Image (tube, rainbow, N blue to C red; front, side, top):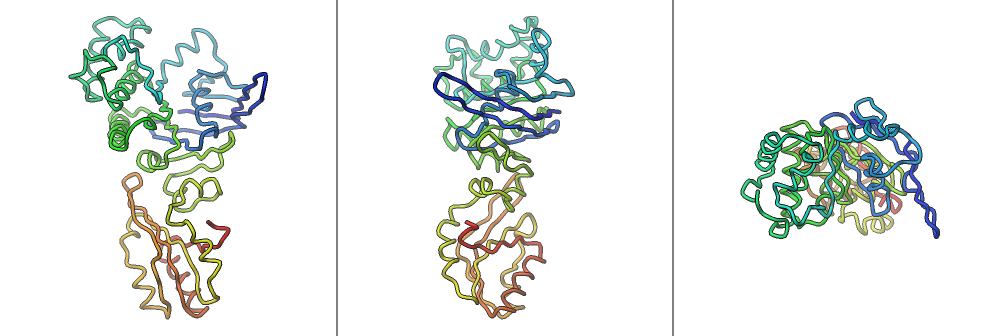
Length: 339
């Protein structure tokens, strides 16, 4: 659906030169909700603006449904951009226009007939739950309602791709939850592909099937959210997905004797419900202490992590760890360097 290949972007001013994107490449599938996560300055927003052609990349290709939009100009580019919608962090609504007129704005730009505009805006107001706010002005709306208007406006011309750039970062947790539920509902109902740009790990876990972790203008890790969460391969991914319960564990691991190990056990789906700790204690001459951990849903699937201290003679210790691993639970021995 969307292919990004070798994208580079450098910003140059009189005082500095900054490369925001470095050979970025990723394929996004029709109908998925794909996330990009990174700290400020990682290149997320630059990528979003280049993909939406609000900024022109220095080099690279952007294929939308097989058409390289990075090579289009003029009317061809304007026509192709109708396949994309954009949801902004700070709403960017027309403050002197009603909710109805804000949603109708892109349709009027596209010179759609009045009857079509009225029908489409009415449909979208119902979809985002703002039918009763049709004639209200943005100043009378809450932050969540303003973002719902922004989402409806992005959907007005029936795009196949919607890019949400930090769409929930200005909202409180309860409102954020409602917006995420709305995006999930729209995706399921319409099949619209969503790109989620965020620095919030909870947004990725709640909404996305796959994620790209960005740092210093590069994609450092790419994969299913569950895989990156439970078995991160890069330091960048570990920093984003490490739980607060890992704090200080590395120092503790450095003070263990030869008959003790601290491990991180991760489990997904049905394995989260298995009593593997009691099984291990029954089968092996070891003691297990739970230092911290918990279970939470990721995309509707239970995902858990426990920090365990396992004590026993060397043979029993190694056998117990291998048994846990063979039972379908991910095991990582934690050291000072692993945290």
